[in-house]
Image (cartoon, rainbow, N blue to C red):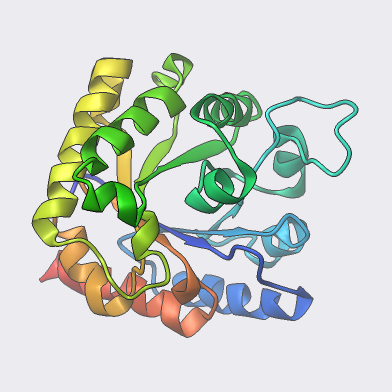
Length: 255
């Protein structure tokens, strides 16, 4: 595991109504009572950000968004700017998730613009990269993912707070994850990309693993070299499941 405090980010995707604020309130309360070794964050739909930010006030839990428009404002009906997200209480934002790339045709250039827009408004972007099952089966996973990382990470992020998340698209929601040596190989390659693109600051960027992260496998994943945290999907929707991941990390790092 990378040095420093691991970052565990829950991505709610298109899930969550007002009643679900209670789940995040439970997480915040548990972390107040017993702080975690990990830094925890929940990235939720824009409709919930302000309510969640109020619910976790005074706790160590970070609230973030799932996407952002690259423009600062203007005639972009239905879009949400970084300044709007920050105003609502967000501190982080996911950009370039595989579901956005695949379902909305987002390019590396667009993802890079979103990342820059985020930092300009004080948000910490989480830049996602990853290969499809077909790309992995052809043996091109490393080339695909490293190219995504290089083109989606603008040079202007040098010295800024952000993280990179490797999320193989074929592993998301599948209960399958790459072998430990495959994760290590990919994260080591991504570290080289970050250093080549950003210089010395690239060596300090946290590289998260995402794709079917759960309490049953997170301990082993977090012990891998260059893994600085995790991007969690469905296991972040319920307080019990998300807290189980955090407590597993706490046990693994104190044993």
